[in-house]
Length: 229
Image (tube, rainbow, N blue to C red; front, side, top):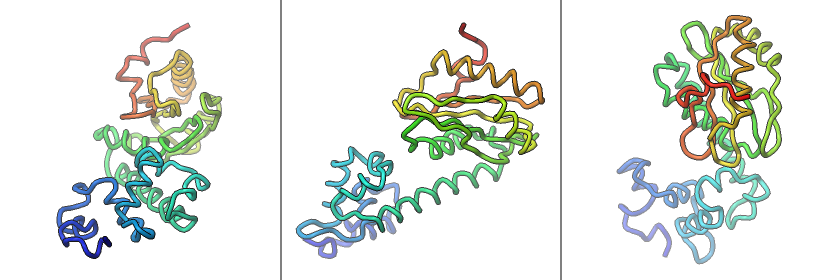
């Protein structure tokens, strides 16, 4: 049965307009994006099949173009549309941070950093540069590495901090494995960066690790106060 033959209250688009997007399932949201199904399947049925194939919404959103195009009913045009939607969402989160002091809304920082880094397949390291009132100046991915490590050079972090005239910053990197627990190397690196940035009077406010779930704050974990050998 085509979605057009469903009761109006059950059609994904009408349901979204009536009840709001938060009340739709992942399959219903994806069906709105797909717009149409394929022979013998409604858009919702196709969406369910795709979510199962990719292991859920996250797997679909993080799929590369080649993997994405192997899904039934998908292709380059849909991949481009999805990437555009995701980038708009990331930019929206960035603008939401700039409307007020970031550190008064720590959840906004976590959400923003997760959106910026969670899709990365290899380990990357970035900085959120802040002014004297801890408002965002810029976010940059400074180093890219392999699946389990990225080499970070404190000199480059210092250089970019000076370029942005930053008064403070928030460090962040991802763990593609999904486990956000800091390693001894992560803690040592954090202390090296804190020491290097103190020389130019730039404060490191926190170091977030992005894995599965919510980003982990190394400050909250007490890692700023313990330096393993």
